[in-house]
Length: 328
Image (cartoon, rainbow, N blue to C red):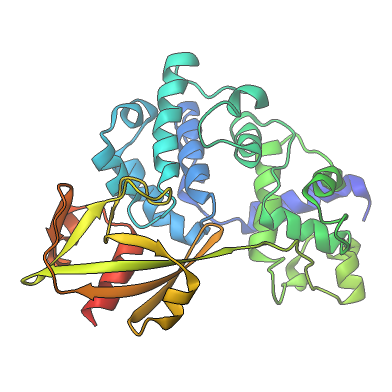
């Protein structure tokens, strides 16, 4: 296969195999901007299949940029409830407000301005440029990285650095259908070039893939360090209900309802005989002991809730997991 044919082969595969995702519908220019903006925020650190129902509900409840800019936080976070990383939702609303006030209601079409918007970094800005404005750029997500690493057989630490992978994207060449092409490469990574057991027999660039020739599909990754922190969640009960407080103490889950908590040291965690729960949040592994208290609880910002109240309030999955453990 000649290098000039890579884009044609990838696009041919995409035209016949792409997923019918709700944000890819044939829509107006304004809808495309809005659908792409919302979906790209939701897809940050979240899988496609998880996002689909959230996206559909979000668009139904908040159908356009103007509505998003004016939506109250209660409704916004209720639409986001369960997706996690709630700062994304707040950034999305702030971004909508800035687009309306500073960019006449349309997404900016250059990298510099896009990166000034809350919650939009290198990947999201390039995804918007390619999908919305058909600019010739391929955003570097985990799927694209995997295709590059296998096709070019990149194994060493320097080879798999972000800097080098961005340079190696030239491997894909260019297409006049830049938006479709960027999505096509990501689609191949998601559906064919899977982390384990890649479906090479379906791959349009199999013949030039060095990993396929060598029959070595192992992916080299840079080491990520997840910090381990220890916490104690205090469970105060009144009749059949439990006390929750608005989180103004920790940087995670800001302003959302959690059980009263405090950070403890590793020794206290290990000595405790209480129930335990492990929760992963972003780059942090949380090891939590659940401490059921008998004394009365006093706090101005507290609420008494039971499992029947879940639908009335915005509860992060973090709180629901602890609730489930307590009710066992």
